[in-house]
Length: 140
Ligand code: CDP
Image 1 (spheres, rainbow, N blue to C red):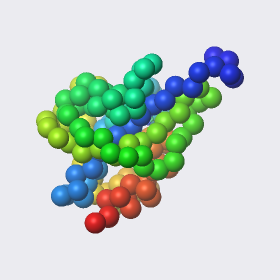
Image 2 (cartoon, protein in one colour):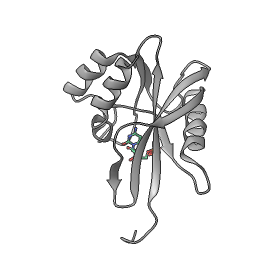
Image 3 (cartoon, protein in one colour):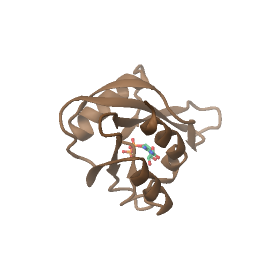
């Protein structure tokens, strides 16, 4: 990797159920540093793909759900010199989240998310989004 090399985007879904004011989290299996911690599910944007399309593809592959993608939420996070993480809001249009790559999924409300953050149960990069996510969950 060179300092001037291409930056790849990773897109994560802030999948929100407004009726229940809850957010979908998925538990990582790997790598060891983050295994067992919870994240907003997503993955790398492929060349020629929009972030929105990448998110829909990843969530179909990883969780078997079809989502409608909304706007950006929270700041972008530099994972490495060549990898930037962003979050997009989304809502489930069809399907029930069933993990194929994660070890579990769960829906949490704002208080639950806050508690998990305090306990260090979120992957570090996603922890920066907690206040934005709680605000979004409280929005009416
Ligand atoms: O390529 P791999 O399946 O390992 O990971 P990915 O799910 O495509 O995510 C690429 C990178 O973004 C990894 O370093 C993840 O730990 C990181 N990531 C993150 O920090 N937070 C997320 N919500 C999603 C991914």
